[in-house]
Length: 171
Image 1 (cartoon, helix red, strand yellow):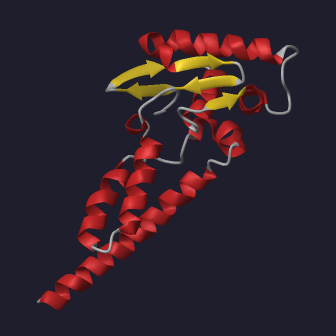
Image 2 (cartoon, rainbow, N blue to C red; image 1 turned 135 degrees about the vertical axis):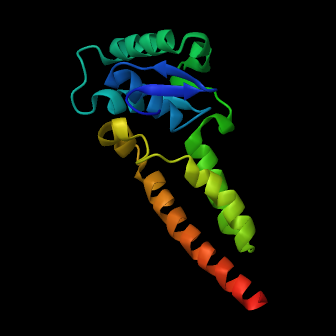
Image 3 (tube, rainbow, N blue to C red; image 1 turned 45 degrees about the vertical axis):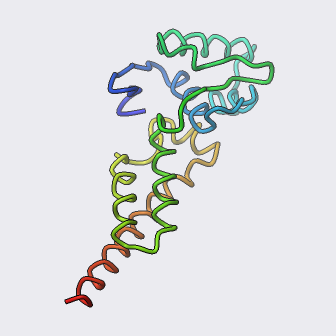
């Protein structure tokens, strides 16, 4: 999600009007390629105040989400226990960042760590899923991603300092 209700997919932009559509998409993005239980989606969308017929209301939101996604609608699949978003891991910036962060942390070479970490950090434009942060993302514990970004920035600063020291020792 980028900006105010815009999904960026392969360079194209898809508007997602309405907080409920965005809430369902974020809940699915947080667990890609996994069936997200109906109850978790209901909690993400309506919290403590569900509609009178919550399951039907959720079906309607998913139907509208699929309509907005157009040719990508097949990525949102219905399963008996819930819904699944089928995507490549490289299609989600959060997963790309986490992968880069893990790889950089495992590197013993400061220059190599920066080569991996910097592109991951470049994916961030603010708090993770800020549009639905008070609802879905916080409910599902997505503050961990924000904390990881903060840790990565601190680590990047430390790696930069280590790289400078290594260069000074070589001179």
